[in-house]
Image (tube, rainbow, N blue to C red):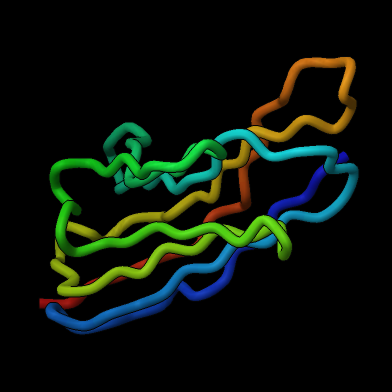
Length: 121
């Protein structure tokens, strides 16, 4: 089994910054894609940013230029630096990892429990 533990959420004023962290532990052979999604009240979960194992980063249009995703494979961790935060960024942020635990089996999607980000105007 694999566990994802997120940290770094909180309350911040518009224009401020937060850094989210997610650490994976458990039975990990290799990582595929790692990333962050978010879900605001009454809305569907949406992609914020992902970073595949082969490199490159993909961002939602709404966060481009303000958020930066990074991964540290040695620490089994993924991070999200969020700058110039806006009230519309308020949501529950979920860490996502696609992890292969067994080299002979396909990778599996795992999700964190979510960390709340609230941006006040």
